[in-house]
Amino acid sequence: MHDDPQTHPDYTAHYSREATRAPEALDAFWMPFSANRQFKSAPRLMASASGMFYRTVDGREVLDGTGGLWCCNAGHARPRIVQAVQQQIATLDFAPTFQMGHPLPFTLAERLSAIAPGHLNHVFFTNSGSESVDTALKIALAYHRARGEGQRTRLIGREKGYHGVGFGGISVGGLPNNRKFFGSLLPGVDHLRHTLDLQRNAFSRGLPEHGAELADDLERLVLLHDASTIAAVIVEPVAGSAGVVLPPKGYLKRLREICDKHGILLIFDEVITGFGRVGKAFAAQRFDVMPDMITTAKGLTNGCVPMGAVFVSDAIHDAFMHGPGNMIELFHGYTYSGHPLACAAALATLDTYAEEGLFEQAITLEERWADAIHGLRDLPNVIDIRNIGLIGAIELAPRPGAPGTRAYDVFTRCFHEENLLIRVTGDVIALSPPLILTEAHIDRIFRTLAHVIAETA
Ligand SMILES: Cc1ncc(COP(=O)(O)O)c(C=O)c1O
Image 1 (cartoon, protein in one colour):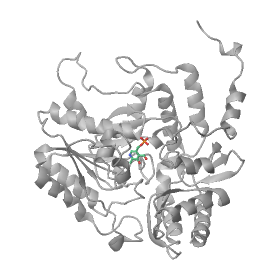
Image 2 (cartoon, rainbow, N blue to C red; image 1 turned 135 degrees about the horizontal axis):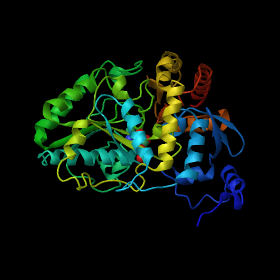
Image 3 (cartoon, helix red, strand yellow; image 1 turned 30 degrees about the horizontal axis):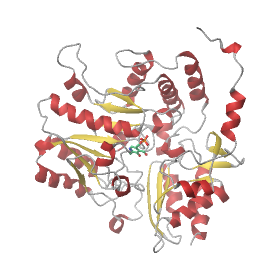
Image 4 (tube, rainbow, N blue to C red; image 1 turned 120 degrees about the horizontal axis):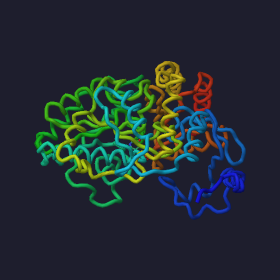
């Protein structure tokens, strides 16, 4: 039967009231990647958001220095995106994409391939960065098998890498806490050394000078395992979760050359660098290095509906398109791959990015951003500052015996006393504001950080 919305009561007031006031109980929600007991003893709850600002349940306007969680590149509650999602939910709430379809993911994939670098003309949709990573790893394995090189099963990640929380992602990832609790992980995985080198590169402005030779670590792994067993290498062009680690000048090009030499696929995990964060649609374009696949999520829908996407080269895609036409070429997918709401959000997000020139914004503001963040270098306990595009990191010396507490104190003071949202991992303060920020916002972020860092012993 057709339900006429006109005949139903308006539930809007009820749900918006629930969303904007402090809940009565906090116990049942097991929060992800959080110190649950610490948080629940002093909650930080957002009620609404608009542009560069959040509003908390206690009515404070908080400047967003983190784009939510590296997601909201166009800022919050942008009208085009809001309207597209509202319209879509009332038009087509869900339709399957297994042996069925609806127009939006086809249209979106075409739009995305038009902004992707080079020959990455095919798009596989997921719901998150973690799913994008596991999808890309599976495609890499199945690709080699489809070409008769099924013995290429080894996957190479990098120390300090973060590739989400699926078993594939934590196996190739290189953050010990994300791995050590969860058993023996995927077999046949190895890791390159990371590229963070404070001794040689501390306080680099933009890409560090030293360390291109660290890419040669791949040659070491090829010697150890033999190239014929290695399917793919996955790296973040700029690592975020490990506390912002930049690629030394020339490093990514060298990695590409070594992969080419040995027939190894190169996957860039651009879950945080995609969609304008470093001044181009993708970091691959900014650094002029062409991967075989790119994994994305977050900025794809401006964070407002969960969605990820894997960009795949023609060569990889076409290797699957053989055999009988009625055969499923890749036994992989998610119920919500190409979900109508996510597609509508992504299309409106791409329009917003284009209309406001937001992919260029991180280049336009880069010098101002770099001047402002490097202005903090002489503050007490600051041991490194890193920046590229509209990404910034300030590394603090850990307190003896209490690592992480110094940056955490800066974080809570910024939030509770200064109405500024930053993010910390360990003793690194990481910044990734919406790309709509102005010079006045930049000044406020770093003025605030300067005095909070100075006062946090
Ligand atoms: C580089 C990278 N890959 C993957 C992920 C995982 O994304 P998600 O949390 O959407 O699964 C993240 C999340 O921060 C990320 O930074």
